[in-house]
Image 1 (cartoon, helix red, strand yellow):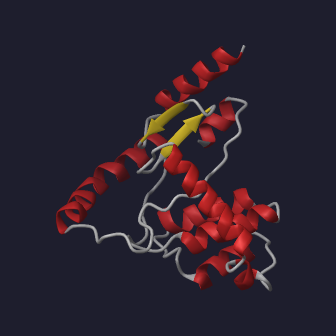
Image 2: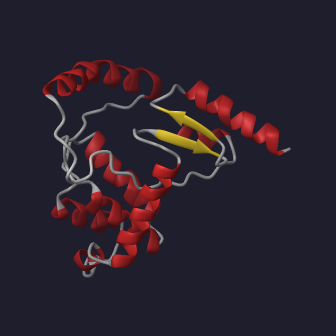
Image 3: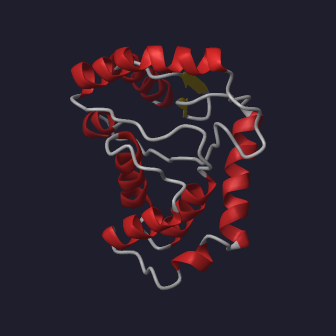
Length: 177
């Protein structure tokens, strides 16, 4: 996504999505084994294609506090840096982003007011914004991540190589001219 932004005039809008919301059935042992077996390939691809070392955090966590915290960060003009810091904490540092103390630490590191941070996580407006994003995903019939929607018209599912995303961006831009 960063490379796309470097090479094209595009706006990226992150939306909330809970892959495993509270109350979801447990992941079967077979599926957990499939996920674990696929990680080395995913890590290799991230390293080779994007120069990123992946060391993902724990599975089966409640990501909603992080999503609500991001809405708070957006309201303070720090949504992008907060999002990047949370993603880094989870995907590179293997940290548990459901931990409120970690989220507050990240908030402080990006310059957010932490005095009201805990109460922001209980703010019904931010919670409603998260729910609206999740409802939008349902309308698009999304049930996995990553899922990218270009120009509210093209859906790209799964981690795709840069060239695939580049082709979609170029098609959208060609159609808009």
